[in-house]
Amino acid sequence: MALTTLIFDVDGTLADTERDGHRVAFNRAFAEAGLAWDWDSALYGQLLAVSGGKERIRHYQNRWRSDQPFPEGDDGYVARLHAAKTRIYTELLARGSIPLRPGVRRLLDEARRCGLRLAIATTTTPENVTALLEHALGHGSPGWFEVIAAGDVVRHKKPAPDIYLYAMERMGVAPEECLAFEDSENGLRSSLAAGLATVVTVSDYTRDHDFDGAALVLDGLAEPVKPCTILQSISGAGPLSMFNVNVARRLLPR
Ligand code: XBP
Ligand code: MG
Image 1 (cartoon, helix red, strand yellow):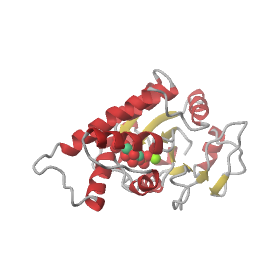
Image 2: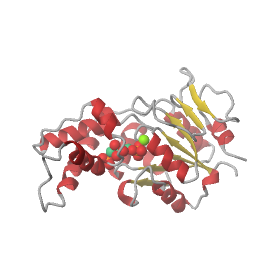
Image 3: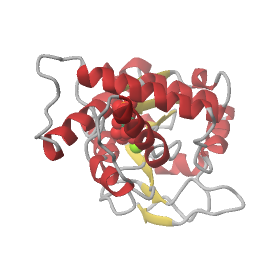
Image 4: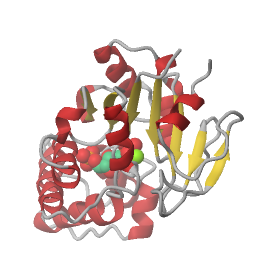
C-alpha cells in the first residue's frame, strides 16, 4: 500500500524533553509538595522504563520509597502531584527551553507539501503536546495533526499498542499505509504491536535499547548540513544522509 500517514511519538522523538523538561518538572513538583525526592539524570534514565508520569511516580514510591507511603485514603494525591508537574512542565515549554530535534520541522513541512496525513501517538499528557508544538513548532501547529492521541485516552500505555490503534481508528487508516516514528524500546514495542513499520531516532537515554524489528534506526532525522548515521536498516531503505519523504515511501512493504 502507498504511504498516506506519518504517526509521531513526542517525547524523545519530536524533542529531547525528558532530562531537561519532564525530569526537572517532576523534581520541582516534588519540592512544592514537600517531598525530599530528587530524580537525577541517571535514575531518571532507569525510571523511563515505566511510561506515563503518574505510573512513574507510583513505581518510584513503590520501588524506592516504600517507607514513605502516599497519604492513606487520598486517592487524588498522585493526580494532584502530577497536575503540578504538568503545570511546571508546560511553563518550561512556554519559555522556549526545549527545541525540536534536528530534521523534525523539515520533515513535517515536506510531508505537508506532499499531502501526507499527520498524527501523534504518545503517553504524555495532552496539554504537554499542545504546549510543545505551539512553542517549538509554531502557533497553530497542533492543527497540522489530524489526531493527537495522548495520555489517558487509552487504558494501557506504551509498550501496549493501544495508543497507535486508537490514532489509526480515529483516522480510518490501516497500518500498511502508515509509518511510525519512535525513540525508545517501549515506543517501538507499541508501534510494532500495532502493525506499523517504524523509524527510530535514538536519544542519549535510548541509544542502547533493543530496536529489533525497526525498519530503520538513525541517530536523528538530520539536516542537509549535518548528515545522519544509520545504526540499523532493513534492506530496501537504501543509502541516505537525511530522512525525507522519499526514504519514508521506500520503507513500506509493497
Ligand atoms: C514518554 C513518557 C511520558 C513523559 C511524561 O513516553 O513516558 O510519560 O515522560 O509525561 P513516550 P506525563 O515518548 O514513549 O510516549 O508526565 O505527562 O505522563
Ligand atoms: Mg518517546
